[in-house]
Length: 472
Image 1 (cartoon, rainbow, N blue to C red):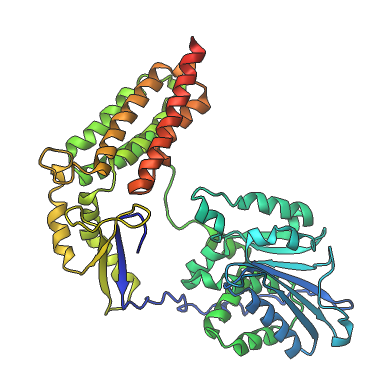
Image 2 (tube, helix red, strand yellow; image 1 turned 120 degrees about the vertical axis):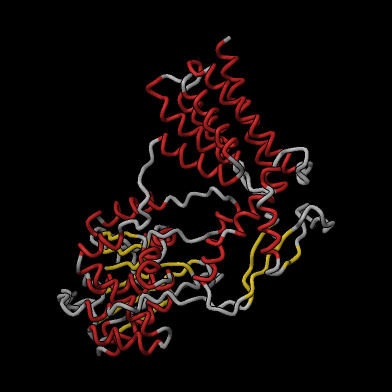
C-alpha cells in the first residue's frame, strides 16, 4: 500500500465469486467435431511450448507427454525455465514418436519444430524460440500482453504484439499461424485468463498438431489433478474454436458494445460527466472552451483536432481530488461491483492520506497512508455533496500543491489551445497533434504528476517556440 496514489481500497477476508463458465457443457458441445488428421509419426513429431513461468506452460508440456505415454507412444520433455521460473522465459521441447526407441534426443533441432504452442507472444518471437521455426511450422499464439519488467520501468512500453505476429508469420507462413487473445477468450468463457494455455492446447489438438488420442489427452488432464473440470472445459473451448470457426469469430467479437463517437457525442458525454463531477456551470465552461477553439480551425481539420482537445481538456478538468474520490467511493455502483466480485463476509478498507492528518511522507517523498474502515462510507457521502466548494475560497483542500497544480494546468491548456488556433497555419499536423494530446501524458499523483506536468509543459513550449522562430 505504498503506491503514490493517496487513496486505495483493499478487501480483507474476501473470497472471489467464481465466474466459472461451467453452466455450459463445453465438452458435450464438441461431440460433433470431426477427429483431426494427425501426423503418422513415421518420424518424431516436435512441439515447442513457449511462455512465461508461473502461468502453466510446463503443465501444458507435461499433459502432452503424459497423454502420449497413455496412448502407447514414446514421448520426451525438456524444460528450460531460465534463471527465474516465475515470470521468466520458459521453453519446453516436447517430442512424440510411435515408439520410445525413435527418440534419440530430447532437444528440438534448429528449424525442427512441427508445431508451436505460443502461450506468450514475446517469448514465442524471441530468438531462442524462433530458431526452431521453418516454413510450414504450425503456430498457435496467444496475443494477450503479459506484464514484463519493461512495463514496470516504462508505463508506456509497447510490446508490439502485432509486429511480433507478423515476424512469426513471415518465418512460418501466414497461413500457418492462428493468433488471438486467448486470455480474453478464457476470461469471457470460463471467467479466468489462467485457462488460456489449456485452451491453446485444445485448439492445437483439434487442428491436428498433437498426434495423441483424445481419450489419452483427457486422462492426462485428469491425472494432472489441478482444476480438472475447468481445464477439461478450457481444452474443449479450444477445440470448439478450432473446429467451428463461426463460433470462434463470434466469441472473439468485442462485448463492450462501444461504437465510434462523433466529436459532438464525445463532448456531450463528457459534459454530462462534468455535471455529476461538479455542476452544470462547470460543464458549460468545458463546452464553451471547445466551441471557441473549434470555430477557429480550418473546416477540414476541425473535427479531428477538436476531438483531441475535448479529450485532453476533459482529463484536466475532471482531476481526481478529494470530492471526486468521495463521489466515486459512495456511488452505489462501486459498492455493487465489489459485492458482485466477492462472496459475503469481506471487509472494505480505505487506505487514505487525508491532508488534515499529519501522516508525513515515505523515503521517496510520497504520502504515508493509514487504513480506515467501512464507516468512511458515510464520510464519503457527506464530502461528495460538498463538491460545489471545489476551487472556491471555502474549499479546505484548495491550498494543497496538487490542487493548485491541477487548476493551473486547466488555465495553461486553455492558453495552449488559443495559441494553437492562432498559429495553426505555422504548425505541422504532427505538431498540432502533439500539443493538443500532451495532457494525456500527465498522469500519476503527487511528485509523479508534478514531474510529468513539468515535462509536458516544457515539450509544448518547445514546440510553440520552434514555430515562432520558424515564422520569423
